[in-house]
Length: 227
Ligand code: ADP
Ligand code: ADP
Image 1 (cartoon, helix red, strand yellow):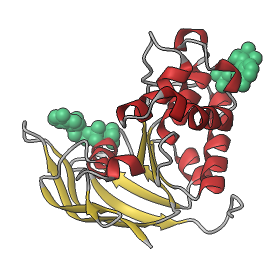
Image 2 (image 1 turned 90 degrees about the vertical axis):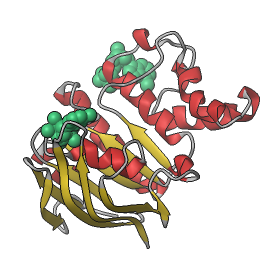
Image 3 (image 1 turned 180 degrees about the horizontal axis):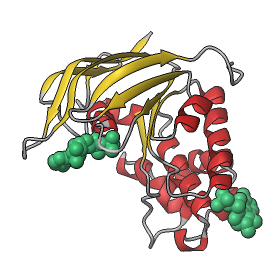
Image 4 (image 1 turned 90 degrees about the horizontal axis):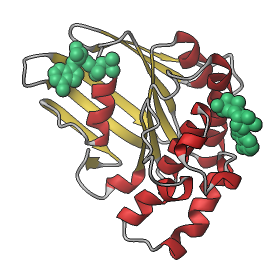
């Protein structure tokens, strides 16, 4: 079933920058898609429009049949940013609990769910740790847990591992693949690494800059074993 539909989408910022031009895309439930392209080609802007963080200037986007960002769907989208954007004054449990707290769940009601996602990313013993006590890779795992705690249908990841060393990156790539396989998620993974896009995704959407636009949309059917 179709999860995301983008039709003839443009994004022009207030200063006149055309960040995305004429983007049309259909993404099905369960796909792992990467957006690949150089810095400035509109990958982040496209992701933010899909999540509803940014509005479109022209065209339309629907997620699960609803206009992007129009209520309801907030629960269905998990967002992971490049920097692990954790609250430094709160421990790991509280950071991961936040999205549930914002939805009105009390700690007692949320505990099991938070513990489940923490064990999913291998951090069950770090619930009481503070972000500064964790390595970069562990902080990124906390961000992933926080994005997953609402059981989203769609996980949007914006160059999540760009700031990490190669070893940690490789480990986390494998962890994201296994999350995807075990949770029936759809993932859009933004990267400027050709290796990462080919290793992870079953479809590479290649973008180019000035103006940002899709230049190739390539299904990958061989290589990494798919489920
Ligand atoms: P990418 O994620 O591929 O690096 P972005 O989507 O961040 O690219 O940016 C696409 C283009 O839009 C770039 O030229 C960038 O400078 C510009 N841009 C991004 N955000 C803004 C903004 N808030 N105002 C003006 N221009 C912006
Ligand atoms: P990264 O994901 O940043 O590469 P590592 O797995 O290399 O993190 O670990 C960095 C440090 O944190 C190491 O000292 C490691 O023992 C510790 N560490 C990381 N994850 C865990 C975990 N799930 N349980 C216990 N210790 C961990």
